[in-house]
Image (tube, rainbow, N blue to C red; front, side, top):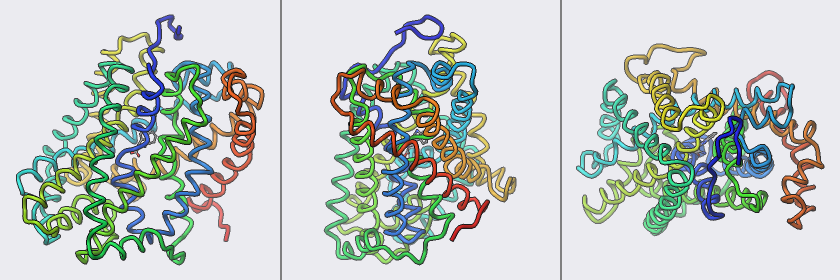
Length: 460
Ligand code: TRP
């Protein structure tokens, strides 16, 4: 395939690889860290319910839209939109996407840094205490130290850059094919443990029995923002991955599988965490520190002595580290693909420069709990600001623009050609249903939630 610069383009080699790379992007700290902490502090089941609806009506249509745009144009996010709509400004969606990729990576690599740092700590037994005051101290020691925060972030960046350097098929595809089975195995082992504990029922009730009184518009926006974040949509990651898809790939079916599996991983993560939390009398609403303060204390309460307890702790943070890796690969690939195709850089140069740029931008998030703790914009630390701006503003805006592009600018004939693989697939009803939702339902829903969630209009 020729790129903008005439270089041949690499792509995913196998249908299974397409699925694992895409699912590897979707499954990440969003499932293991964000979903449980947000569900835990926002009433459990009610939050999850809104999130599930948003995944179907918003996440899935945007994912299909991005994949078909990418595969049709066969280019990075910005160039794809320029090719499909020459001389119009739709490519700005891609520019916003590259900016979002940086903002997300800035705080995401730091959360991954804590996860990576916790693995040796858990092995050594340093996190083994049933007293949250002790585990809280361990966490503060980590995030309060500028050097530890920075160095672990660099370790994470070096790890991801090394895989990216190996290429789309030999790096991303090969790695996610290996990591995803490990992820599912660990998740199932932890679930067997948590679901056989005495308080499992209470934890499950928290996750599945909704209490609507806790839901407000900003929480609805957060749930919709999470649906974007979870499926890696709204900023061009999936346009980039779609551009590596094979011609005979069934895009709607693949997207449905990715969405379903991703949801399953979120629910399994919730079922690993909440039954255990409730069994030992901890609070589910610790927010972002649920994983790093509450969970070590929770695991230290398991029967079987320190070896078993530490084993579950190590497995848990390994799970998070594995999940974070596939997701970071997809975020990293967005600027790399652009730099290679647009500026004709080698993959090596693009990867190294992206890594350095991410280390610079990311350092402001890494230092948000130490050196820069008092530096705030819009009342938030850089870490919180990047998180909020990406999930609650940029991704929804990007998703809105992408579905408007597909529904109102690109149009049904082009979409049908793309999604039926030029007439080879017999899926016209699916394509029409998708098109209707992408044209009318998703944009209106996102607009209403965005305006209300940000307090721009008041509705109900
Ligand atoms: N989906 C990933 C997670 O749940 C994060 C992620 C990867 C992402 N690529 C993205 C989020 C692109 C938004 C956009 O952890």
